[in-house]
Amino acid sequence: MPKQCLIDTLTLEELAALPVSFGIWPTAGRAFGLSRWQTYELAKRDDFPVRVLRVGQRYRVTRADLLRVLGVSEPAAVEGGDSAA
Image (cartoon, rainbow, N blue to C red; front, side, top):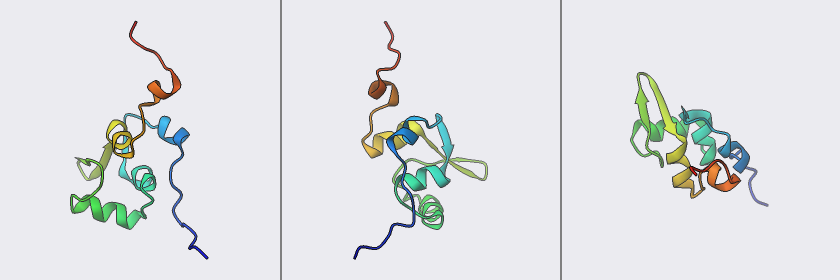
């Protein structure tokens, strides 16, 4: 019997609703199925799978970087959002 995952990953809807940048935990960590400890440990060692921005004492990630690493299209392209016409 497989082990139950204790960390919920993000849905496509949640990814599409992300702001331009956000704190590394819980959002970015959840996207990779990481615990809080794993998320911060990887960020401290510069081993997090997405570029991490250090803003004062905080770690932040951009939506564009996260979506690129996950292989997900930008929400506007997926949802047929506004285009420059």
